[in-house]
Length: 606
Image 1 (cartoon, rainbow, N blue to C red):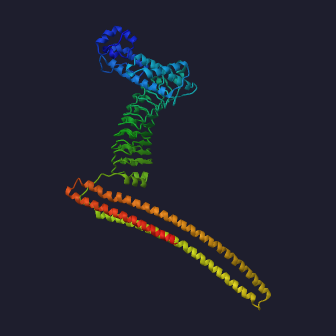
Image 2: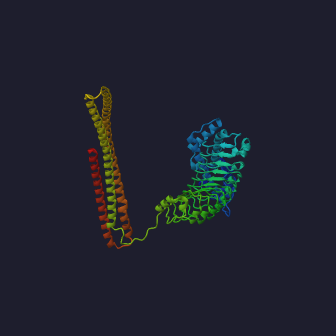
């Protein structure tokens, strides 16, 4: 049997049988470092049967005698790697087997995975793998085909390919010509078949959540395609033929590795939604503005540096999202999109916003934070409201001004500001204590007035009882009158008893109220302590941010414009300021503790 020598190592992809078939060319192959194009063309065509993406045409302007061999080696290695990924996907998920044929093919894949070393894979092994993977994927797909439905649902089926042989099966040819929706999302697809061109009624294609690295060029020959969902794959480009899909309304290609979008996309006059966020786009198609029905454009989380000027032609735009890019300016003509409702350009490198945005009267939300805005068009105040405008003005970062060595905010000024803040804090504590005292005094006054009032009523009733008793003992009073006075006496006695009973319960009520009041006082005391602690924490933070940083930061900037000898003086000012702030914080803490003790004594004294 013929064996390979060091001169024939380039033909390691051939089996012994295939080497014998090449025997007439063997001498020529031995004398050359690589086989000629004539020898390799047949093998390249065999690779194209395995993967239709393999091209057998020579590159334009290339006349190298070894281009065919070089392309074969490149495609051979790619197909071998893709098949290895598919095999591991099958073996990892432990697919069920239904008949003897699928059992044999699964066993064959296991043998390939265990025994075949990558550098010893031969062309006939690739062909056997291809056949086994076709059989297993077809076995999974066929039970999902419903000839009475216009939708082919292969979602989450864990398939690794849609075999080309399925489109050549006479049983399914008529069905695939009429199918309108194909859902093959959330699988392990490495590629889509070129035979999708036979689906002439296809309107919606879901192929999201796979391992796709490209889409077939034949996809542009599907004349009725309206919605394409190819998001969350590994796509690096989209086919230029996509511009032939004149009925395309929605393209969702977010979550890939796209660096460009096809220029032909401007031919899709019916395009309404384009979602291409989370990619690596540096530019958008210049003719994207020709898609005059475009309503939503989401390009956030890319590397865009500018936007096409033609974008203003999209008169139906409602949503634009360019956040998290590298934009330095927005087109001045963007204000022509008068139907625009949502615009996001946050986290870019913008310094200005177009004045023409004041023409977008339908604008309801504008996100422009995280930029270097110097100014915001005042016309937006009337559209988005004064509150939004003021908030954006407060957030904008203006360029740093030159700093003079004579700082206006010297340490004395800063200490005065800190002292004023401390005085405000003390006044707030005093107001809290005064309010607590006033509330306690009011409640005690109400209780005392109620006791005095009931005491007066009781005294009046007692006087009436005493007068009635004297009248009853008098001899000049008639018996009938005595009887009337006796009735009055009894009535007053009854009223007196009732009032005494009421006063008893009133005492119990006041006792309960007093207990509850003391308890609530303790609770308010704890709440006030907590509030004071929070105020102290806020004050400390304010000192550390507003006072210290506002003085130290100018010092850092001054180092670039003053002599070294003067920096010592500024450093001394800085140390003095820090010490003063620390003393003020300690004083604030002592004031808070003293106020808490005063409140405790007052409340428990009541």
